[in-house]
Length: 452
Picture 1: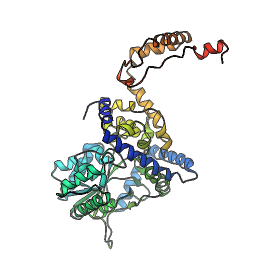
Picture 2 (picture 1 turned 30 degrees about the vertical axis):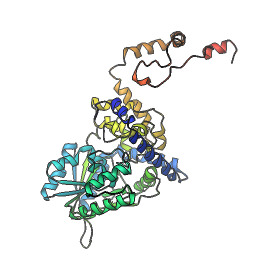
Picture 3 (picture 1 turned 135 degrees about the horizontal axis):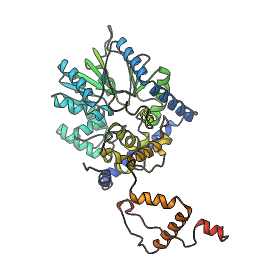
């Protein structure tokens, strides 16, 4: 993969198959999401959700401690991980202790973030993704391109090729046939797995309950069939009460898929109890920081409010053109352009804030009212903290005075008439045409002449 955003974006734009798949998928997501705007007081609910997320983040250590105590009372065990390495060590040690050979996983962006699969595979453990999209990209040796649809950059023909290679026979590009093959293949893995690993949409501090939101039955299988269930949970994925969860569950499915409620909303409180047929013998919850605590109390703290609905990706004009891989990180789209540099403030991530038109469409669809365009501007300001380029400093000085502004505009108008329409001073303006002044003067001049 290319090292810089511009090169990755150019490569994505040059891939007609990718562009077609992105357009088809994001258009569909936007269309089905409109069905979720069926709540009369939707704006009021969004404001309430934003306030609730703010209140929880204000008291996050206290709420997390309450959650941990409740998990323990229900028979589970909570582990605290300061970073990715510690989180991977905890899960690997649990797997070693139980002589785990096979792990089945439900979809989790956090485990992608910390590189859990690679850590377990390095220890000789077979890791199987069981979400259909995640399984597709795993078979392809690829990475997810979207929070909701990890394999949206694949056509059904490409999926048929992958499945046919695995099956040893040709399978047609028919969704029903392909899904039936995946279902039969994965069911065997559920039954033989020694450990199930899931993410966590929400943890409820009131009862220590872990809530998973899925549209496939794999989440239920991962959390109930293997003898050990490990939950990998970002420290911000917490609500305090069931009333708060009710509000979030009113907004999350509607913002993600336009559904009033996802097909499966799984609530796990502790391991299997005496007399219960289903469920694991042990439940472990790994609460991961990995840079999140550094965001608390900063101007970007609202990014921790994100509930991973992916609505901002689907409406973003940049994401819709270049897809998730061009961002070079697990999280893409507007939320990824903000979140990734916060969690990994390295030179390689600072340019992500430029992958935005600042149209604010992301803010309009965000169910918890995160002002993403403001946070993107904040990231750009932080990137320029070392000082703007000399040309921009000179520009700012000239335009800070009316006389300088008018003189520079007059010079630009005069000079533009002699510049070829296809002049390309930098890659940023490639493909654009140099505008031509109409020659009637500025608004101020036309007002002075009485033309307006």
